[in-house]
Amino acid sequence: MKIDGKVIWITGASSGIGEALAIELSKRNCKLILSSRRESALLESKARCSGEDSNIAILPVDLEKTQELTEKAIEAEKIFGRIDILINNGGISQRSLVLETELNVYSRLMTINYLGAVALSKAILPGQIERGEGFHVAITSLVGKFGTPLRSGYSASKHALHGFYDSMRAELHDQGIKAMLVCPGFIKTNVSVNAFVGDGSSQGTMDSAQENGMEASVFAKKMIAAMEAEKEEICIGGKEKIGVLIKRFFPGLFSSMIKKAQVT
Ligand SMILES: NC(=O)c1ccc[n+]([C@@H]2O[C@H](COP(=O)([O-])OP(=O)(O)OC[C@H]3O[C@@H](n4cnc5c(N)ncnc54)[C@H](OP(=O)(O)O)[C@@H]3O)[C@@H](O)[C@H]2O)c1
Image 1 (cartoon, rainbow, N blue to C red):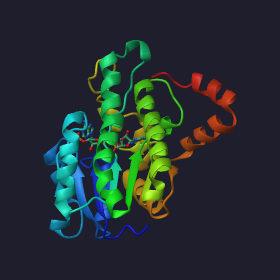
Image 2: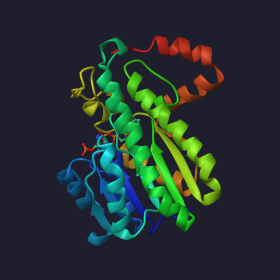
Image 3: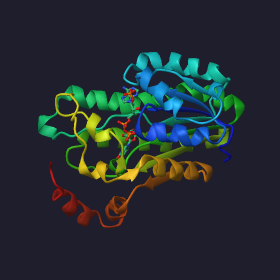
């Protein structure tokens, strides 16, 4: 798929991976709609982008307010007349044990990470089907492929994205709709700082895995190359990616390994 010149809606564009994607895609003459909750941070992301000012629009969106998302999608479509590519990237992680996590935190993780993406995809599908093409990218995680300690609700929300987009692709491929699932490993962003702990407050500190992880700008370049190649699923990260293969081919070994994973 040719990315240059496409109309691309990116959620979670105020920070980390989403901002890095916006910066890279702006070099490709794309028309971008940048969304997240914090308008001021979105404006800062926009300021770091290249190209013409009129090619980049800001649309504040709170993925937790699912009842507003259809209307937001209509607004997004009106900005440049269509959405060619939706990058469902906005999300929140978790660092808390099952026994210490309030049920409401599970509900919020599922709403923001899963239902928010589903709502936006569903809202833009009719226009894309009419035009005969559309590309949905969901940023999941390596923990969308296997569960690890401290991320029970986050991992569940990312697994859910795999189920939804694999099904959607199978249903709509003959109407020109494509879907790609992207599973990042450890990427150097604020994801662990912003992660929910058991009572829904933020962890507030950076994990060493993210601190030493892949730069978001490197991740963005690899992901855009995967979009161009129309991959259906890709893992992007460092040596932690091996977990997916161990789980798939040696599930018993993986289970023993993950039980010994550090619960901190
Ligand atoms: N970094 C990693 O190691 C890693 C690994 C696996 C998967 N991921 C996934 O990558 C995606 C991007 O995360 P990141 O690493 O770039 O972390 P980040 O720097 O914390 O960025 C998260 C983004 O999501 C937005 N967001 C959070 N809650 C939102 C809500 N309720 N409504 C709308 N937007 C919301 C944030 O913007 P506002 O605060 O302005 O709303 C921010 O732009 C996430 O889906 C994350 O799960 C990251």
